[in-house]
Length: 294
Image (cartoon, rainbow, N blue to C red; front, side, top):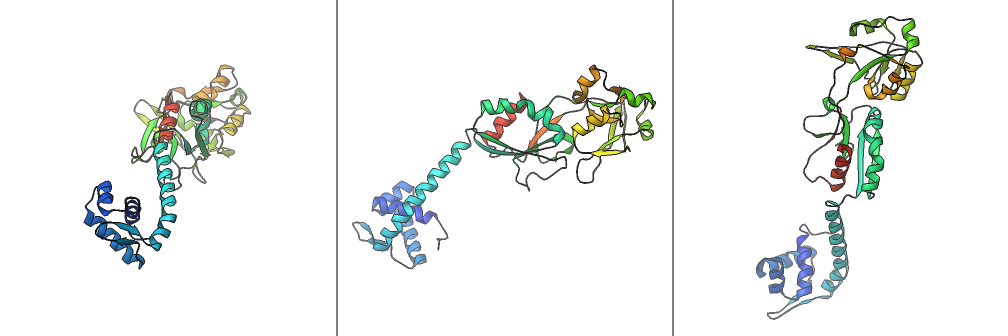
């Protein structure tokens, strides 16, 4: 049975070491009467006498000696553990559970993994990729990465990528048998590759031109949740795709893909790392943020 106030056990240890209520009170910054009251309450709760008191000294009873033998190493272990935990708050060490969509991996995380490991070898990055939007707090993640529009307002968000720009592309083969769309609504007459964010949610292609904003629910023969499949489908002439500009830059340069509706695709803020609060932020998370922003 543990006492309701564990501080009484800590006071008992000090009294046992000092063999004096007065010296124990001085170490703890309280009055001797407060120490005496704490020990009396502890004995009453256990129903056994722990200390033999006289006007000149304090000694341990047999029960007190038995308690001291078990209690001292236990408190020492707790103090050491607390010291280690406190040290980790200032040293980048330990595990970080990170959630991010699969389409953010290549642009945000992959270029920085080697840098993170080399600079902070004691950090263990535990990565989960999932295109659906999950509650990082409820599921025990330390942080997440996503586009700013998908991050809850009560989160702290730190930008970890430059601006992104969407690109609507198709293969030369596809355009040999299909006219190029001149405005977003023309996409309804095209074969398009849908991208799934979660179990059921399909991404509506978003466009902006001047003051005009609209989104289009496209249709086509393929629904995927992996960016590599999206690109493969475009290269194979299956249909048009909506991707980040940087993902298909080499294919555009080599003429493997053709871009359309470019004037409807405006830059927008890229990815942000987000987490619940700045309060008690670990040194490991600070180090991850530093590397991703560099």
